[in-house]
Image (tube, rainbow, N blue to C red; front, side, top):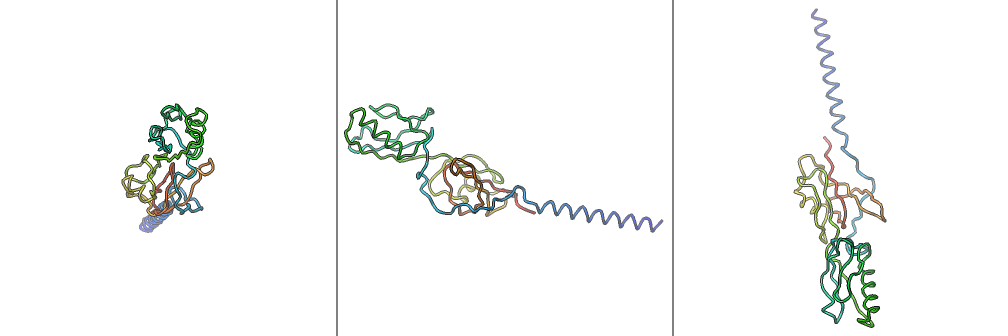
Length: 200
């Protein structure tokens, strides 16, 4: 009888050890996976190639025409409304294309023969921080923001977060692409920062 009890104890111990090993194996697996391609580290002017969208604010300067110059918000229909000139489509184009449209309208309406116009994007598409942070959500983009400053705006890492490395989701040539990023990675408008859960 003692031998049976001893055998039962040994079997129970072996079962506990096996379950413990399986639990540890499960904890070592990453919740989600990291892309293999590193995120670009080059600091880029966010206005370069940026396509204006509703809600963005742009500064328009018509040289020698202060009454036509100022800050304008792109309305929900994608237009800006300039004094005297009226509505001009602005959504989906770069600042350079919008500049050309304004110059063309000024010529066509005979306001100016050789208009000299500058367009500067003042506000951009927001960025997003998701995953293991205290306050995930949408945040206004500002020039110079990095992964670390984005996470700080989201309240910092929570206790489950894998720190120092994140997944960065970015629109590249019209398609979403995932990169492996660090805290020093610079962000662009519309980027998504995904903070993963740490390994155990």
